[in-house]
Image 1 (cartoon, helix red, strand yellow):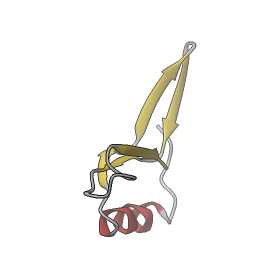
Image 2 (cartoon, one colour):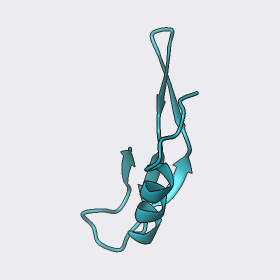
Image 3 (cartoon, one colour):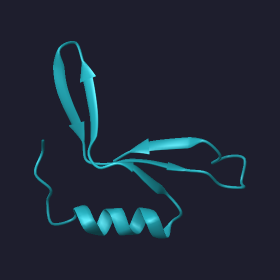
Length: 58
């Protein structure tokens, strides 16, 4: 598992303020026998059609 840097909590709070829900902290991805970690997985459900169901990994 990766170590968190000094910006981790700031990024989490900024995403929450913008309406994102943190779904994974960290987000684990297994691919081809490799173990990969992304700092955060988040999703945002919004009324605006252009963002509804949109997901990000930071």
